[in-house]
Amino acid sequence: MTRAGFPRRHAVIVGAGALGGWTALHLGRLGWDVTLVDAWGPGNGRASSGGETRVIRRGYGQRRHYVPLVTRALELWAELEAEAQVRLLDRRGVLWMASEPGEFELGSVDAFRANGVPFEELGRAELEARFPSICVADVPWAVLEPGAGALFARRGCEVVWRAVERAGGQTLLSTAHPNLDRKGDCQGVRLSDGTALDADVTIFAAGPWMAGLFPDALGDRLKVTRQDVFSFGPPPGAEAHQRLPVWAEYASRLFGDDSFWYGIPDGLSRGFKLGEDTHGGDWDPTHGDRVVDPARLDRARSYLAHRFPGLADAPLIDARVCQYTMRKRSDLLVDRHPGADRLWLLGGGSGHGYKLGPAIGEIAARAITDDSGVPETLGALRLQP
Image 1: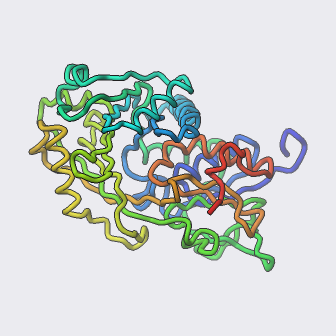
Image 2 (image 1 turned 60 degrees about the horizontal axis):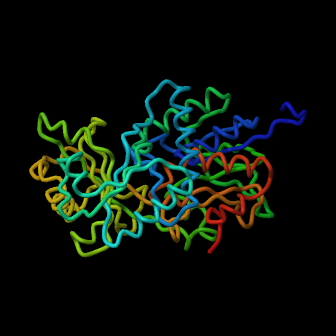
Image 3 (image 1 turned 180 degrees about the horizontal axis):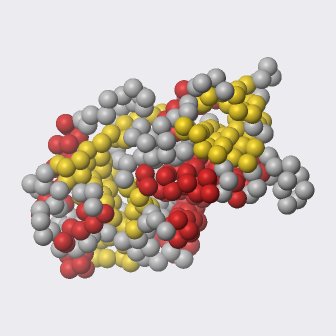
């Protein structure tokens, strides 16, 4: 029984990435019995929440509604880190190198001021003095968000999975499909061995598999694309590269396009991570061979040689294919299925869902518990065209 005297409700959550795992954890803390199901386990190699690291930052240009969400997510990541005694967060700061005319960075500065987020504006001379390993000859200014940084992604999924278990939840390794009744409502899930799990509420947070699971509701609203991420090996003694903050920039001045680049330095022990956020082609997350595109590697090397000349000849020590489940305007999805009241859909991570997982999971758990929708102020999270 719950403290309110009502029977405990049961929720099945499919997908143990950042969105599904945190939703399960929050529901458990709200008094639900939860079962968290994942086909290959938390942080696995096919998952959007897999890999070693993710950037966490509050710089979102004019999209100010994300700033309080990331602030809340930072609080929850830090709380889980302290509870589990496992390092999940590296607050080394995030450096945004401004492009001309700098609309994104100026929008982020306005949002920082409006939300009380500490930041520094750095001119070129100060950038050269503080970060001599970065070539900033074509960077007019930058914004440093010192409270941001990087998350340990795969590790975070595993820690949330264990936290769900500590809170009394059940975890299962299995594929799962919605178990619909004759009226189309969801009664729970059916597992790969034929077992049926009944549930008062079923939540699917299956990342790049969502559109295939719910083609009528999501088929034309989610698009799965591939991105290549590279890690280069700094030479011995290159401590200046290890001490850098996480960094990001729009690099139109370099490639003549709107490409967006980001990186996580070698201080996190997995090499100097470099990624181009430009969307790749369509992607099959189950059967696709995760072999990086040589042309993308060439672009990455060109960028590296320009912005970090000390790493121009650094060897490639790791490379991986990841996937983005893109929604229009890159907004996330947290809403009830339009044809099944007891079925909720979470997804559309759009390349930035991991950092927001704790806050989005909290919003979802409260909406599900109250049998309501997401707050109107967060309408971008709803299932709209």
